[in-house]
Length: 121
Image (cartoon, rainbow, N blue to C red; front, side, top):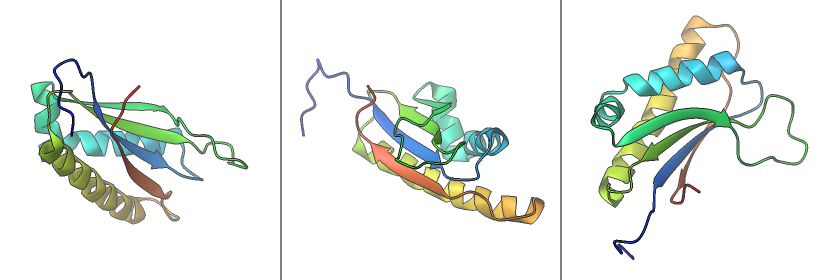
């Protein structure tokens, strides 16, 4: 592993919402993740930023509204251990959000994919 001082590596986790997801789902899931204790602590310390954005990857035949994502961007100074902790916390938070959404809204919540990405360009 290269930990050179000149490296501007950022640790990124993409939380991609699938078909059927709307803006309200993105806002609700982002707010849910922001309240996860470990993620909230990292946000408060300035080591984590959680953003909403259009998905970076268009898939052929993707329906309208697909490609929404939330980015969890960790500061360059964090290491693999913290990245792994945040990745697991994000997956756990998504599972909890989907379960909660089932209980408060009709229909199945959108599929959500949590994808680690080591390079935020």
